[in-house]
Amino acid sequence: MRTEGDTWDIVSSVGATALGVAAARAMETEEPDALVRDDYAALFVTASRHEGMNRLLDDPSVRDGSMLSSGMIGLRTKFYDDHFLAAAADGVRQAVILAAGLDARAYRLPWPAGTVVFELDQPKVLEFKRQVLADNDAVPAADRREIPVDLRDDWPAALLDAGFDPSAPTAWTAEGLLPYLPGAAQNALFERVERLSAPGSRLALDALSSSLDLDKMIDFEDEYMKNSPMSGIDLRGLFYTDDRAEPEAWFAAHGWTATPVTVSELAVRYDRELPKLPEQFEAMFQGSRFVTVANPRTAPSA
Ligand SMILES: C[S@@+](CC[C@H](N)C(=O)[O-])C[C@H]1O[C@@H](n2cnc3c(N)ncnc32)[C@H](O)[C@@H]1O
Image (tube, rainbow, N blue to C red; front, side):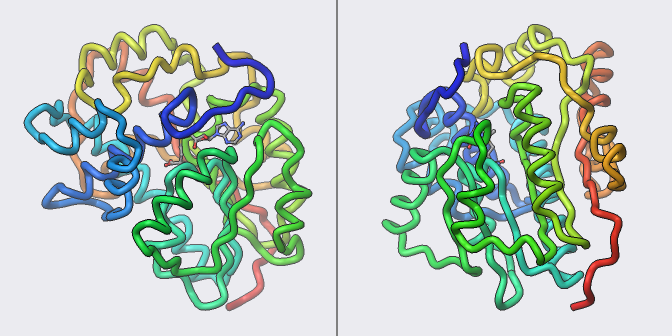
């Protein structure tokens, strides 16, 4: 169960979910028709010595092989990659990755010269990441800055101290973050993003279906994704399920435009076939979506 101010490292509590996502990215990277390549992901999993996830990486025969395991993360990773690349093409040179986990975009995306990438996450998660990247002589492709914080707290001061420029447009992401925040902290996060966003800024996030039944989702994982990287993680104890604003509605009320895309639409966009799911799960998945919200004011040209 979550408590106010709880903390974690990369193999415990919410931290393990970042490792699970990295394992899924490593598996997707091995696919012949991989949507994304993340060669750093396997390095993190190996260094963590997490038994179950390393077994999946070492022995492809024990993977469940379903599109829902690594393929879903492939779609998600590509969606966020495209978000940053589109912003860069529009002249945005400042990126903020909220809940960066083991996201290696600062290393693997072709950032234009002069781009600064800020990564926010819990201190021990960033510490693990830094150590693994240093051990592997990884060199970032942008000016990467770490901000160790709790995203339930007032983090903007730390971001500003690290050189964030609130007068420049920003590409933000909150990938795989919102269910781990209480509803009030989600609102506070949105308010802070809005306050720090100069004209031309945009944020990409993912939101679960508001009708999500967590118990059903866990049953689904037990049945369909037995040998997926996330299968050993009890999301019931990690998600906050209190009432919260729909992100699209929150940002629309603040004058931003919201563009949601469902998982199925994303699969069509990236030419991937999603498996047919039982009816009760289909509805649950359809309600979950990826959303881009944009500050409507004109962005400065590149
Ligand atoms: C599912 S992982 C996603 C990581 C990364 N965005 C990705 O997609 O690979 C969730 C991440 O959110 C971070 N996180 C959740 N709640 C947080 C909080 N209150 N403060 C800082 N980080 C948090 C975790 O540490 C973890 O890295």
